[in-house]
Length: 113
Length: 111
Image 1 (cartoon, rainbow over the protein chains, first blue to last red):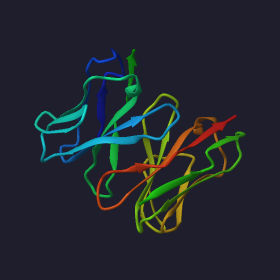
Image 2: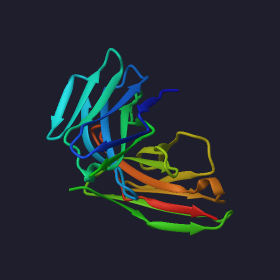
Image 3: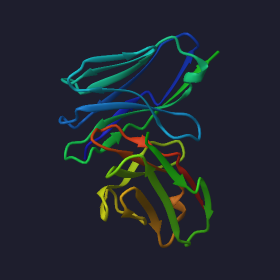
């Protein structure tokens, strides 16, 4: 079946450093790629998304890049802050309708003061 | 604006007991609805989705079932819970676009 691989599974950075999380998807028909942030015990919250007709998108300290040829997309967080500590999930849309998403396994990001 | 509710927030149930979790969406009509399970420290597994009243699709064979008795209501059920049913159950919705928005979740512990 289709899948999304996400790396690394854990990431530890110092406050102010950058963090990069990478995902690879298998469904060549995927055309929508959201990123969610989940704080401990809370629901996943959408932080940024990108569609296949765009190569890069930025929102303040967060950016996402997409390489459709290689089926890779990445989340970049600059000037990390302790409140960025959370689990981040990437996802890719599935072909076949119904707006289904397939999620990566998650990356636990720890930002140390 | 749209909001999504889930209840109960937490639930502790004995093995073999029944289960009913409810999800409702406000502020929209005919949404797509989804049930996910998240085991401790793990990712999101899609269990069921629904595109309309009475229309349920199952993603994985399991001990659970889903129903959609009303347009904005989605219910997750089990007749007999297993230990492996423990987890964080999330309901999500979308409409007209792929972006899914999650409810606050129900934390289920089966003992």
